Each structure stands twice: as structure tokens, then as C-alpha cells.
Image (tube, rainbow, N blue to C red):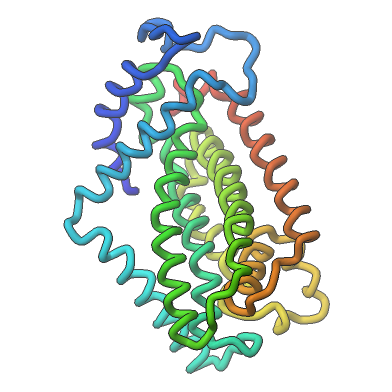
Amino acid sequence: MGRQGHDEVVPAAAAEIEHEVFDGGALVGTDQLVTDSDERRPLIRHGYWHLLPVLTRQQLRVKYSQSALQVAWNVIQPAALMGVYALFFNGVLDVGSDDAPYLSFIVAGLVPWRFVAASLSTASSLTDNVQLISKIYFPREIIPVVNTSVGLVDLGIGTVIMLVIVAVQGAAPSYHLVALPLVYLLVVLFAVAATIIVTTVAVFIRDVVHGMQLLLLGLFFATPIMYPTSQLPTWLQWFPDVNPLAVAVTQVRTVVLFGEWPEWGLLSVHLVIAAGFVGAALAYVRSVEHRMVDLA
């Protein structure tokens, strides 16, 4: 969501949070919320997380009220992008696809990629919401997590498009699809952790926002979205196993295109690492959140 969306969200969200934030079941006054006086800063603050659905609903209302055809555009835009990529990479550059139809191959890579890219593109969300975070206290990581939560709608739409395209191109649905949510869990954990860190760092280093598109471009080509891992040179064959997004993309293809179970060992290791990454992100934002109001 762009700056306009954030500007529209702030006043309504601030009002809702003032009525929603509770401390031990009692409404905490605004004067108590401006600063966090607790010396101990636990990673998970249970009294505030009911704000996540409040802000998520608010952003979804803003996003879908700005255009009567927003849902249609959420289908048209990725479908058109996938068609262009398929024409260029397969039709012009003759990139392979491990014996799968190339359009299905890239769709299975672009769906998780677009979710991560959309989350990381909100690097300025904390600074855009300075009126909100300076008015009342709540865990700052809620804002980037809200942006990731909003992206789950597009991830769901993209998944439907992917399954339709794969079915049209001849791949019958398999019971192995029940493993897809676990693969998506890796994508979501990675996106949440990375977005929390990026948005927090951007409060202190504003150039992060300007460099994000370059970072995303590098991540796009470092992940086997448009090409199979088999086309990597021998000395780079190890890289997809350590890149969590590459692992997710590869496992989505395994489940959706080839009707097989994911590599449970590799997926489990990355899920544990991603959960640790989320914990590290929460620890980082908790250690610097008291300085954000002065700098945001």
C-alpha cells in the first residue's frame, strides 16, 4: 500500500486503537500509552495482539475502497505478468522448466515471490505511520505484520490462479496439496521476519527504503523463479538449499506441479530457522522501539 493508503489509515486506526488497547482487561488511557515504562520488554506482548485484526481490516477497507475493480486487478495484473514472463523467458530465451509446462512452472514461483516482495515493499510503513506510533504505545512490529497479513489475501488469490493454470495445463490435483500450507508457512515466517527488520532499520536509515527495489531485484534473480535449479552451474548448486525463498518455491513446485510430498527434512530445518528469524526480529525491534518516536 502506498503513502496515500497509510495516510488514510492513520486517523481511523489511531481512534480504534485508543478504544481497543487494554492492560490486564482495563482500557489504558492515552497518556499511559505514549511511552512504554516497562523496563522489561518481552518479545510477545499478549495484551496488544488483538490490534492485528483491527488494523488489518482497516487496511483492507482502504485498499479495496480505492478501486471498484481492485479484486479484478488482483487477478489481471499477476496473470498478465506471468504471461509476459513466460513469453520472454521461455519463448525468447528458451529457459527450461524441468519437464513441467513453463507457464505453470513460473506461476508456482511467482505466487510466493509476489507475497514476499509486496511485504518487503512496505519498508516505510513505520515512518508513514509516525502519527500513530507517536500518539499511543503498542508493539511496533504490529504495523509490518499487518502489511504481511493484508498480503495473505493476494496470496490466496494467486494460489487460486496457480491451481487453475496448472489444471488447465494438464496437472491433476493431488492429495499432496494438503502439504501446501506448511510450505506457505515458511514463506509467511520469512516475510514477517524480514519485513519487521527492514521497516525497523528504515526508521533509522532512510536509504533502506530507496534501496529496497534493488534488493528485491537481486533476491528475484537469486531465487529460481524463472529458471530451474538444474540450470545453475555446479559451483552454485548448493545455494537453493540455503535460500529460504528458493526452498519454498522449489517445494511449491514439488507439491503443485509434480504431485509429490515436499522434502520434509529440508523444509523442517528451514521452518525452525525461520521461526528463529522471527524471534530475532522481535528481539531487535523490542531493543530499539523506545527510540523510534524521536526518529520516525
